[in-house]
Length: 526
Image: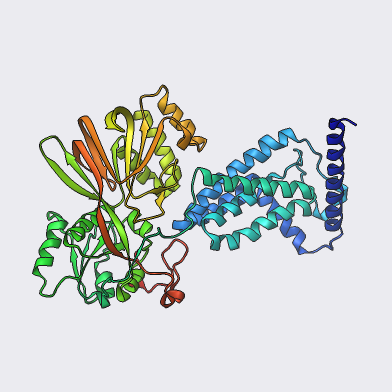
């Protein structure tokens, strides 16, 4: 017998086994006694038509924000992908008859019966895609979503519109599509980046020895956290920023005036305010306390500090980690100035990209907002010339991160280490034919790291020269222009962070991505 005959015989035996399995499952389900479950499953399977059920679930999850909002968005994207693959692609390739209506009792049949190919089950694909996507972002939420998805999958067999193998393959397709979204949109496995523990951090009982500066206009415009911080840290000196006074000058003046030695500096505000206070802490060689009251709090999130209670815990026992602070010297051939970076620096069209991403991120999530902003920004962008890697290059933008960002060879999303002593440098070349189009296609295929238009390095130091002055942006703020730039890791700060391995905090475990609903009101930022 030829090899083709062997293959044909093997396939025939496989299909026969699948057929026996499907008939056995269908027969067992058909013999179940009538109950109220029959009506419930008919309604449930109908509610999942055109993914209406999952869109409604996504709307409820998105209303909460944080991890559940990201879960909702990933779920919607996964359902869209799974529906396309199952209903448009696979159903067109595999034409299979649906189970005969008479195999199921009449009271259990779905009416009108679907007329499309039975293989695979599109409902099962969408259900599994949504549940898997939610589990990736918010495992606790998935405990509620998964049973609902499983019920939808089973309902397709119970109502007699699919064979057992249809729903199994459909569910596998949906889960696979959801898992594949990680290639474009990485899932953060941990709530905090790694960093070396600092054993000798001062204990700040009730904030004693701490000077905190609060920027009340950061974050929620209707909420001033100053009173809550003063109540939580009653021994600390709490200051508020003033409209016409530089916060650095205000903080230095307060340090000089204190009758007792200042042991640590604190900051409550967005990343721009945190960067300014971090520069003062580095200059005075003082530990830093970060209280996340800004809109996005990128630095605090990478650090792993999400609420005021964690700050009270960490400062009360002296738990802290070592964190790199980067610096950029910028200016021209005659004069150079210095600015410190806690997150990122950008040059070229990147400032516009950041502005659009931050505008769209609350609604869409970080990665989708970044992708959309990249497409829009590249369409409007003008290339710039920089001297990099010992030769002049035309680029669309230059990105410099304070520490390695994850994932490599893709859109930088978050840091997985805060004390590496390295800068993360990325750029997009403009000197190649169709570079913008190639960049967008590579991004859509999750292959930007393998594209010639993309460059990436991790270095302890970087020099950049520009033929003319270009606008600069650091930590989301445009701050000046320059032709000469030198990037370094300026030093390390001791920054307070609760050690989650400490038995003291077992009953205060950080909620998955965030604000704990059980916190006393004074510890919660609205």
